[in-house]
Amino acid sequence: MRKGQFTLAAVLGIFIILAVIFVFFLLGQSKINTAGELASIDNIVKANTAVHECLLSLEKDSLFAMGYHGGYVVLPYRETAFDTSTSILSVADMEANLQSSLEAEYASCAQDLEGSGFAVSWNRNAVVQVDLGHPVLITIASPGKVYEINNEANSMLLEDAELQENLDFSSLYGIVQEQYAEDMLIENYAGYQVNNSWSADYGSVLYQVRVESDAFVFRVGRVL
Amino acid sequence: MFNKNYFKMGLLLLVLFSLFSYSLTTALTTTIKEGGSPATPNYATLDETTIPGATSTAATSSTGASYDLSQTQSDFQITSIPQDTNVVTASGSITSFSMTNALFSLGSLIQGSFISFTNNNNIYFKSLFDASTFTAAVEKNGTVSVAQRNSMGDTGKVYVNIDTGNLTQNGNITFIPEGNNPTYVYYNTTEIQFKDGNLSLLGETITNNDQSKDATTVSFNENGFSRLELFPENSYTNGNMNIYNAGKTSLILCKQDPLCAINIDHGEIQGEGEVNFSYQNQVIYSSEDAHNIFTLNIETGEAGLKSVQEGEGLLATFYSGHFIFQEKDKKLFVTARRSSSPFVITSYHSVEGKDISIAKDQVLYANFSAGLAQEPA
Image (cartoon, rainbow over all chains, first blue to last red):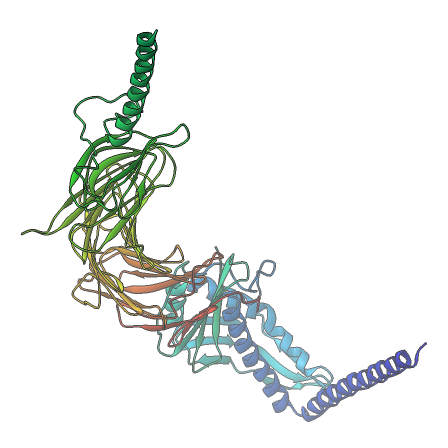
């Protein structure tokens, strides 16, 4: 082995060792944070708040995911060129998609209490409501209650998780509909940012309408 | 014995003299009909004694007869000339042509009808009323007819009918015939009228195709064409730019005259009506409405459309790089395609007053953008 090759191998080895140490450091940090969070849930009120915030966060994330995927929270088919729907759904279909996704997912918020000594008892009659109007309203009504595992009498009802987004979905949907054509309309929409793009093979188009005052973006593709 | 010898000698001299006289006569006359057959009556005669300055050379087995008329001072006519005859004029030689009803003045061709026996065969002539010189390069079996009228009390006129090859005036104006009746008329120092062909000057070309009913009139100066009429289905080319009249009425094209339908003012071109603009033979603007006024600055890439009477439907389409733009129903649309047009238009002012910016990979207007070749998000 020549001297130069040895030096290169040494440098690479040191680099790999440092990278491994860095990864372990990050993992350790993560565990510390999670443990710290769980340690802070030391009473029923905090447990209730954690689940409530989880539900609100889920609603918000689902709404954003629905916009990103053109009406689907999770794409029902294999990923398209732009990872979004290739057709415009009706508002009613989008509301239904969002509702069914939340119904399937909200129970996952119980995981936030794992290891804390508290748990959630979900209400089978909980109601999920979605209204993609102005504002956007998403509600998980009567979701259930939070209780202490070792003392079930220590429980607390979860309040309705009601998300109200100051988003004029009807207007945004109108812009998307106007843009969704092979010939794009060059237009200035006050309060919205339109960023459309063609794929590298010119075989499809991605239409993106972003709300300027929010991070919400609606994306939909079109195969040409 | 004595008498017999003198008789034989006299007979021999008579024969020799007859042969000499015959060859001399042949050399000094043009009484030869097409194809070189023997002379027939009804032809004018070139006579050195009556046409001062004319000289001639007799035909030999290898070359035809040659007439040098370049120094002549008189007007005269040649009604016909055969293939193997060379006529030297003040402007150049005329050879390998059949010639009928040719008129010469001061050593120059004034008029005549010619049929060429070879390719790229030149016939030279001058204008009667100014210093313009013409060269008609005719292909084999091609014909060219020349007629002139002097400017005495009237507009001078050089009339040329040519069916193949090309006609050049003063070395820079070129007429290329195409069609049934290619005609070229030079009126004076600034005007040309032509039909069925292309006329070029200093990098500019104007067409008059077979479908055009009338002749195209072109005014010109030292900078090229200054004013012309662009008939429907005809085009004007200036360097890389081409303007095509896609409408049903003729359009006047001028330079530095905004009153004309098409005005070229240095790098800026304004076209009113149903016209198409092409750059390097690719369409960059296509008008679909006679009320459109399209402006393009070739140097800055700025373009704009106005409509003197806004109509519904498609007004115009223009192309820049991979983008295609359409003015339709009082709105501006854009799409993209794999093939690309010349990237000439870099900004555009729409009918509705939108100012858009066009880059090679992106279109920008206010809070709207459309980009190319984005990878999946």
